[in-house]
Amino acid sequence: MKHLAAGLRHADRHAGLAGYCTGLMLPLARKSVEPMAARIDPFHASARHQALHHFVANAEWSDEEMLRRVAQWVVPKMDFAAGGFWVIDDTGFPKKGRHSVGVTRQYCGILGKQDNCQVAVSVSLGCETASLPVAWRLYLPKEWADDDRRRAKAGVPDGIGFATKTQIALEQLEQLLAEGAPRHWVLADAGYGVDNAFRQRLSDLGLSYVVGITSAVVVWPPGVEPLPPKPYSGIGRPPVVPRRTRNRQPLSVKALAHTLPADAYRQIAWREGTNETLRGRFAAVRVRHAGSNAGRARLREPLWLLIEWPTDDADPLKYYLSNLPADTPLEELVRCAHMRWRIERDYQELKQEMGLGHYEGRGWRGFHHHAALSIAAYGFLVSEQLRTDNPTGSKKTPSFAKHLRFPPITSRVAALRAQRHVADSIAMIRHELSFRLIESLGRCPCCGRARAPLRL
Image (cartoon, rainbow, N blue to C red; front, top):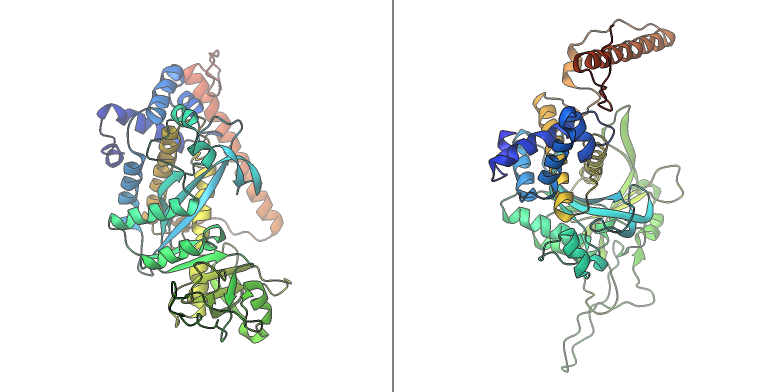
């Protein structure tokens, strides 16, 4: 907390930081300002609510500086011996109404459909054992960016205009690199990978990437290339667009996958899962992205096309493009492509455990402040997890569990009885502690109402 507080620029904000992060760490069903204030200081809930709301929604401290300090705390504990990676992704927060900043009808991943929501773009830094968001920004739809009245009411900074999600992600990544961040390879899903300009910019920055694409992306298959541009006639600009003929045409990656022989696919295991080793059926071929046949079409550099096709499925499941070197083994391609699971788990825990989507304010500053503090609380847990040298990075099997001793279980019935015994014991302890709290405070721990002292 002392390390984070040093970036707030004012000593009066230290109490707000401690109180807000404490509330985010408590086992509350909803981690918005009001229930956190009621739990932290039940005798002065109203005053604490105002203080926390001012700290997160109005105080002029930098959320970017907060994320930078969180990274300074966590990243030194991460192990990059096997390499690191940047993960570009976005996440949605369903919202009702139209007054919260950035809310519009758009695709929301958590709902799997279009609905009213906010969407934030992030860049995370990861390794084999952990990952952490280090850049975060709300996507501002064009209808918001062009509405001066709504912008002023929500406090959108003047320098923030409309930008696509890929443009926001590239801006975040370029800023990190300009600040001295390492040039690890980049992962992204098909929402970013289908954008040829996005992939080209990563290559221009000298970054390797493994990005998802859709089945409709068109490529030149191995051994087939377009004809060179037409000879220059001496008039106008020299032709640069590659030529196609009736018999020389590119294929969609789906069609190409169906043309590959069965022996081109191999069973590859990429990591140990919770219950079993995760494995799948993959093939990788060298292709060139075809794009359109006019305008800025050019002959692209060869790329890896990675295809994941489960044995029992009629069509491939996923496709990836990568500019990793031509001698990269198939196992390495698969391992890189499947490292995105970490950011998905990060978002899941940030939303379920740290209340990332529970902010109820409507302003730009409050949205980013709340997210930065949620990431700060999550970053502390990640650093503690790394400090305990948990080799799997899984919360289900912390390292201290190795030192616990359990009686041997000889049958499934005995195992169920043991589970019920533990559950009953925990419920009894919680019940007793709650009434002890009532007895000591004279108030209900839930609603704060005065109660007559009870005897146990």
